[in-house]
Image (cartoon, rainbow, N blue to C red):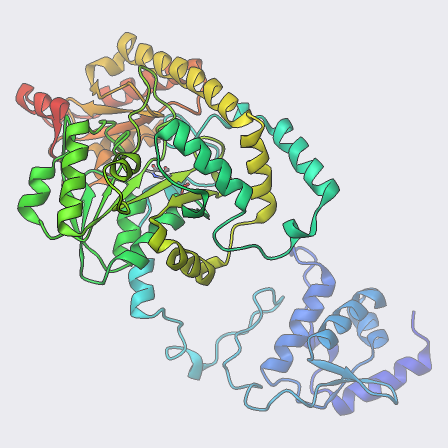
Length: 546
Ligand SMILES: Cc1ncc(COP(=O)(O)O)c(C=O)c1O
């Protein structure tokens, strides 16, 4: 406890120098998550910014404040230290703590400073502040913020059947990954800790170029590989660099919302191009928008329908791109998971093979499906002439990907762990897909859906037989704990036949069987909207015009 004389001195200082008693200045609430020293800090900071304590006025001593608030002096000292470090308070040589003289008067009580988020006693906004200072993004910002990513609402929550796009995280070889990381950290070469080049860590670029050549038939040097924070950043960068606002972009319809958003953000006019049994319906695209500047496609395994683009269609698409001077964004997000045959080589390789000129294809890959999505490492393969532009733009956005993660990944690939993991995943996913197909065939779901192609990927498309409104069917699923995204969330415009996406990669066979039974029962209880005709079913099977 402070001694009596010191206390009297402090009381005097308080009466004469600070307009309110310490207990009015600071209100503590032990039930709040924030530590007490932070509450003291936040309240004094707010009092200064709102003008309740004037610049240059003296604060009570830590001893008095501690005694009045019935807390330890160390707690108050911690708060004062923080306020001094931030320049709100200053200590004078002859003793005492004062509100800094350097805080400009126009900041104080101007209303421009909102009370601290962590303040124990939030202040009501001043009248003058109310309407005028509501923060608003720019028009471009508002347009960006209005773009919706359907899968985002599930992010951060434990996946439930049939969430799509989540790999089997439980079998990721984290101990191997950890050993490589530990070895790197023991050596910790300076090059891993300093700024790196925006293109990406060279050994990783080399490992990716080698992998793409052998496994994806791509034709590129490591200089053409740009490491980015996942496919999403690759799409954003490509759209920003290659299209003018107002340019037309073909997108698969239905298609990947992430690509749609990236193109929209760059100001593209989106034209949905439907799919048929051979992939993108090129004739449709040529009819409605022959002068498109860019086409986004997933030729190895169309997202979400699962069609593989035939070689004939690929060659025709490349010819169109060359003639029209258009770009092709080839998103090769999950071609590794093919169960019946080897994947077709990439479009990038096919185009690069066809002549001595640079390709029109921008190839995009990601480790989100093959390893784990939070790694946030993806890559682009770009024509040589565009490498510098992509690297410069990448540096503007977020400079580079974390080098240590890139170095761990490079060793993981070089030491053969990546290919081993892929082989294991392929076998596991084939098993899981089998279980899902069995669960559908042997349970009540068989009455409600027809499944789409099953030769590749991490999900199946379940075409609804009796419910046109797939959003309603999806909501019904959610009510019984089943996550099955509706196809209509992936389309521009309405769908003629609804479908649910049934992801299986992240779930054990028994979970998949139980979940298909649950979904079947749930759909039984949902009033039908008239059966889909056999003609509509044929159309949905052989072609996918929505
Ligand atoms: C078509 C498609 N492309 C790319 C990705 C991967 O995106 P990212 O690398 O940004 O995680 C996904 C993931 O769901 C996808 O469905």
